[in-house]
Image 1 (cartoon, helix red, strand yellow):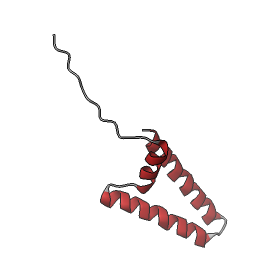
Image 2 (image 1 turned 90 degrees about the vertical axis):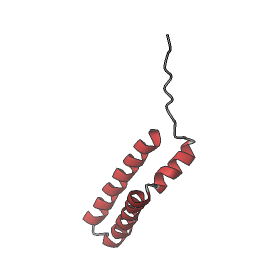
Image 3 (image 1 turned 60 degrees about the vertical axis):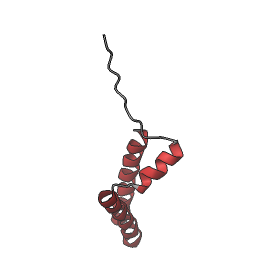
Length: 74
């Protein structure tokens, strides 16, 4: 799904920004952002609910599709 790809790109970008902030010695800001990312990942792991995916699906109006298989009878 599109929202999952966007979410992965956003998480990778945010981790890159956090790494940059650590490199330029902005330790406090980087620590707060990294804590937020870690909390989101723990929520996702424990409750199988990703808040960022939920928000993206609402913004993009993306619903979970169910694939229905149709068997052709001859």
